[in-house]
Structure formats: structure tokens, C-alpha cells
Length: 450
Image (tube, rainbow, N blue to C red; front, side):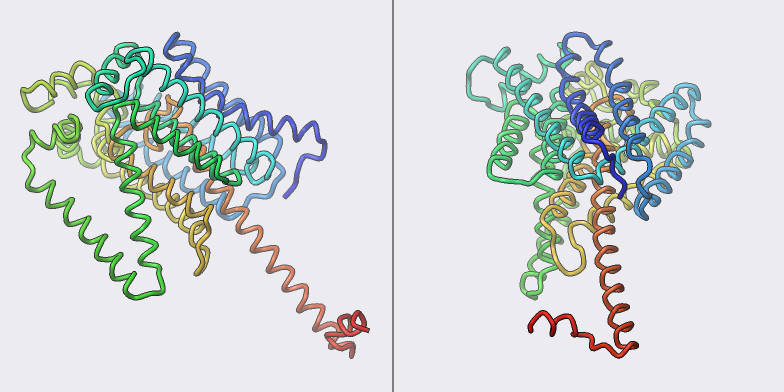
């Protein structure tokens, strides 16, 4: 892979890579004091640094997985153009569609720079520091509002409401904090100190924010990962246990959803069940192309079912659409948009699987990346920030930075495999050449022994 030759150029590359997560890390700090400045700085700074990195590394050869990313992103953009044109508000939908193009370009621009070890390490260090900044902000908000008291479910729920009135979305900050740390750990050599930092970040992001989404999603991801590892085990009893655990969890979840009344499901999901119900109803009305981007703003509140306090609270503080990226895709983009989104998910999941399970062995870094992929895709059932959001928050950029991390790691894996293959071919070609000239294949070894 071609690399910048000057040390100053490499330092610039590292500085740009380090700056990207710092912009994402301080976003919520600026947002709480001046929303307009935070929004105005996020996209230009992130995309500007990514563009400069892409210019510095544009001579690097494009790998097969990068070509696959270009293809799947082109399919995604083209597939979502049609529902945007036929949307109930075409101009609004096209604006969101353009934002998706800009956001997806971040992945393409960062794939090649992250194949360089020093640049990737700088990005990883910046991500870890950004997660510490976010954790410190969560801690500060909690102490400022609640004081130095032990967090309980009641206190953090009160805190969440108070923070929302100030414009601080603790659900979003919590996800950004955890996922930023995970992204940084996937790029750095992990040690006890880094694992302790991760444990502290998860504890702060889950215990001090009143959000059960992170803890619940992490738990489900661990369960899925255990089932996958059990199914890949060489011992029959472990595979059977893994299959039984997966089947029991799936059947139990299906039965719970089937027998739980609507109002109790709404309470259990903190009102999300109402939002998903509206999304499904709108999908059934326009199943092929949907209503277009951000169409939830038109009639979501008026369509909410029920007449209880939780529904009125949702109507008052509604934000983030249907709080489910898949249901949002069905309601806003229809089956066409949903299918292209699933193609993107399949590409990301397949690439992460390749990193976690290269051949018959298991790679630890790849396993962490596969876990992160599960976390990102499963959390999409509960919140909007991520791969299929509206390209306007740090969590959206983090998701596409993660895509670049996955693609760059697969490219490095392919480069290493190609290097071994070329060395092996060179060796056998040299052996055949010596044999053709009458020289023993082990002549060099015999001479060195003498």
C-alpha cells in the first residue's frame, strides 16, 4: 500500500484522524449551550477532515471489499431516490437523501487512510478520548441535577426528563459514549487499562442516563455471540446447548410479544410500541414506496393510539420519529427502501463475520468488531441514530466510521493473505526453476548447515 513519504505528512494524517472523533465528542457539549453552532460545525468539520485524508491516500489501490462497499452504497443511494421522489413532501425527502449521500461518503473516504496503522491508531486514540469526554459530560449532568447521590431508576428517570428540557438527549449521548469507546478499542491494542475504561464507560452510560437501551442491547449481543460461538464449537454437546439457548430465547421473545397486551407492551418499551404501531399502519397504506423521509412529522402525534399518560408524554416530547430504524424504513421508504437497507446490513454483517471467523479459527479483534456490528444492528430496533438515521447527529457519523473500520480491516486481511500467497508462489516457482537447472531444492539449506 502506498504511504505518504514525509514524516510531516504522516503527522498531518494522524492529526486529521485524531480530530474527527474529537469533533464528535465535543458536539453534545456545544449543543447544550448553542445548538445552532453545534449543528453548523458537525458536518463541515467531519467531512472536511475525511476529505483531506482521502486526498492524502487516494493513490492506495482499491481492494475487492472497497469495491463491494461502493456497489452496496450505490445501490442504497439509488434505491432510496425513488421513494424520495414519490414522497408526500418531495423537497424535504430529497434534502434528507442528499444528506445520506454526504454521510455515506465518509465511509468511502476513510477506508484507505485506515489501512495505515499509524493513522488508524490515531483515530482509535481520538475515539477513546472522545468517549472519556462524553462520560465526563454524563457524570457532570447527573451531579449538577441530582447531586452526589447513588443513582436509582427513579432518580435517573427524573434526570432524563430534566435533561430533555435543556436539549440534552441522554439516550443519544449514552449510545455515542459506548459505541465511540468500542470503535476505539477495535483500532488499538487492548490491555487491562483499556478494558477498565470500557467498563467505566458502560457503567456511566447505563446507570447515570436512565436509558435501558444500551444495557439491554449489550446483554442481547452477548447472548447472540455466545450462541454463535457455541454453534461453531467442535464439541457436539456445546453445539446442542447453543442451539437450544438460541431457540429458547427466540421462542420466549415471540411468546412474550404475543401474549402481552398492547398497553403493557407500550409501558415495557417506554412508549415505543405505540410508535411502531403507527409506522406499521402507515406501511400498510403505502407498502411499496412509503411516505418519504421525515414523513412522521406530518401525522405521528395524531395517529398515536391510546389515551393514557405515556402517550401524551410521547406527543409532547416526540423526537427521532418511530424510534426504530427498520420500522421507519418501512413507513418512509416502503419495501423498496427496506430491501436495499437489508442489502447494506448483509454486506456489513458478512464483512464483520469474515473478520471474526477467518477460516476455522477465531480472531479476537474480529470478534470485537462482529460484536459491535451486532450492537449497531440490534440497537436499530430501539433508537434512530445509526446507519439508517437522518445524518445529523454524531451517532450517525460513528456508524459510518465503523463501516470504514470494518472495510479497512477486511482489506488488510486480504492484503496479508495475498502477500502470503505471493510468497508461496514465488517459493514454488524458485524450486521448480532450480529443479529444471539441476540444482537440488535444499541446496541453500545444505550449504548453510555446512
